[in-house]
Image 1 (cartoon, helix red, strand yellow):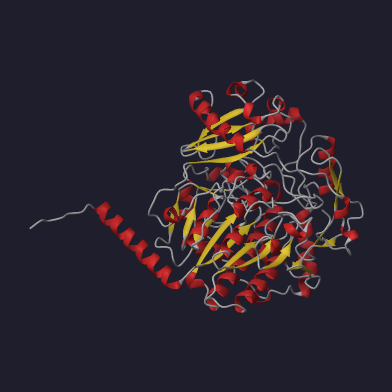
Image 2: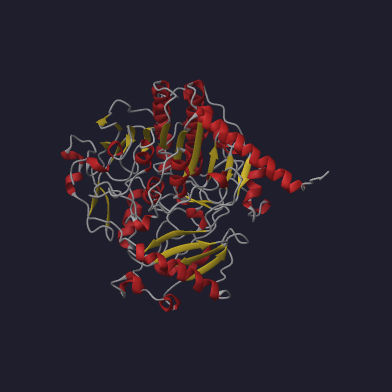
Length: 615
């Protein structure tokens, strides 16, 4: 008789494969899964309860800890580039979307040559719905959601607006991007809320998180779970302006910083909305055959209440604090719920992964990988490297990671910004971020009956509205107009929206240089002599990156996740290898698609409503 013995590790592997096979068979019997893709806006690494016990996000935490927490999930440093990568599966530098966000009067949008994720899913029988923020262009109807593969759309086209009125002002623009101008003097706001293609001016006073949750509830109740659904849910939260019904700030009364308190209230309000969406999935029969993906679009803007501690940097930078996003995947179909993954995943991977899960085929030009086997714990990540960004619009800036090594080119200065709610004398920054997600115990938030209702309560409106205004223009904070004045006086930068956070208060160059790595300062915006020296970017040579005016920084992200020890001078061979890998991508580089503002975009020409049709 032959006796076969197995090691413990082998037994575990067999069990895992058995679980996957069982899960796959069960999924196949249910048919194509419902896909829910939730995107938080400007959510920092340290703004979720599994990273920070002071944050109240019980619904998100239940999903995260009942799924797979993704501790190495990367996004682009700002909004439009991430959304472009998410819905195309391509690096933004191959689309012309690598440099900045789309402005409200910019006559362009996400290239019409790309097949978007909803279009790919429709080919395999999905109904597709978008609820929330678009920000991928609307000068022509061809750029809008219902022309890009979505069967329905409820939300707004621009990048930011008032959370209660669903309106925004118009930003006059001359010489973009070199000369951003302040919001028009009369500060008049114009409606930006659509039900499919029709303006919806009936929802004034309803907080956007409540509004979008209510729409999703009605959508799910109106459809059959037998038809596979793709729901794209990009929340307005927690982008500026800082506005929230005051009840949501009550868990944070011990935080003195008004912006931080208001911002975390916005996070908690979004969490409640996610809880309502999941409850609706369950009550309508969608949940058992669903896959829920949650991610932020970029790192948190630290000067508007967000926090990325202990990571370095913030929104609009290529440091980990600007690009490593809070994320998870949750599904009853997962064989490995309750796990934490440290495998590399990039925002471009979701296209391949979700289309593959739906039984479709992604376009050949996508940059992502199908991560399903990695997410279910049965295989290593197929991704071993990625490009943080590649931008030659002004000063040549780029970042690449291969394995554990990360190279940055001209990243600018940034620091490590602790949140107001912790006592640094009693807490050192963790070097293994997994321990944070594994050990924190979050507080709970109990919603009042009024806040369970999606319709904003009129009697609370004034109080909450004033609270939101206090958060936006609190004492000791500079107003938007003051910051705009400083921008014009000092250096140009990307001004995203009237309400967009300008990531730092810009300082003269000598102050920025004195601040060094520890200061919360803006990246250097000087033009690059490197990129100006060449008409054809394929002619860039390795030796040009070792000149004195080029800042190269190298980090081992596994051993030094907080980016505190620059290894570029001691590991020059590694620097050279990463540069060679990066420069191979220049053949695919598409110049940034930036166009001067078009005055025809002004809502005064369109019945005071932000409307397509002017390009």
